[in-house]
Length: 313
Image (cartoon, rainbow, N blue to C red; front, side, top):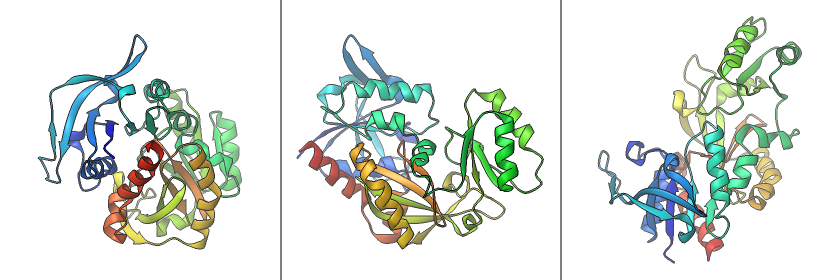
């Protein structure tokens, strides 16, 4: 089966080919004989009844500094293609949301991965709210007094933007910390969105586990250990990836959320687990498959394409 595959992502010429999950997915697609087209979200458009993209047909190679060859710029009608990957990084702002609305217009006749309707309705820090028995105490609020009450109840908390990513803007407020008011003023001056607060989990010092699920089934995990003096374990801010297996609790969490992910067309998902608690369900642009392949030999990109080809076929 040869498929026509379009990648909606951040600039492909700037990715780290040893870490970027989208590059690995595209590389595997090329290996399987699929045709590749690349465009950035700002070149997605709706034109008189057609969802269009302006970009380039591409060929990839695992060669640093020379990993992509682009054909001439051209316009394509995305309805003529078999698979569209929604893979640009957050922030999950109105630009991101608009792209999901446009891609909704061609899905599922053209398979969009992940299903844009549910990407829009299930951003990372909101889907977990449906599983309160699996998560640490959590609050979403904009009102200062409400957030202050949560801080007074739990003492040591994490405060972060609701629609942020990569560890940006994540703060730990320990017992006795007096910065909540100042941080609230800072965030309120930036945008009109609520904040998310969670009880701090000391187990994060042992790592924040990223578990990869393909079509609702766990395929493996990596552990992300915070750098010295850091609370955040994100690899974007210096977190160190380590080999790790799945515990019984991890499998229990995946069994609880997997059926919903599969039902809602979330083929490639990365969840975050600290100790025994689920903290995020990443459906927009999850990462970690290259690290998992290096540690365990698990070719997640192959498993993803097997799932996609079965759906398209």
